[in-house]
Length: 83
Image (tube, rainbow, N blue to C red; front, side):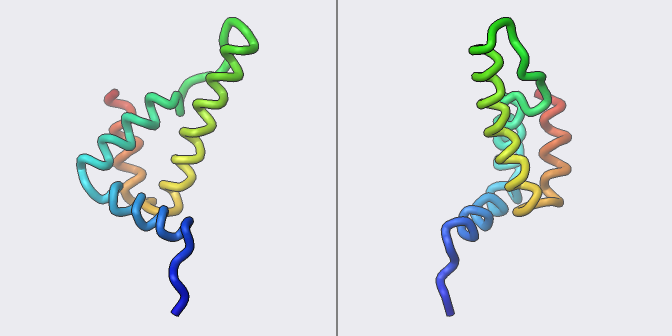
């Protein structure tokens, strides 16, 4: 049997994190902090670029959660609205 690759291990770990209340709360906080639901445009092109880069991290995490823990993602999204 072949050992799981890095991406498989990462998604498994992410699912384990998302299965706990502490993990869901932390992931919700990170998604909100990374401006998942905010516009990226700012006063200058530099601010917009920085915000878009930060939001890009949130989108990557969101997509990974959708793959690793779709059921828990619904709870996480609900928590992002509380922060």
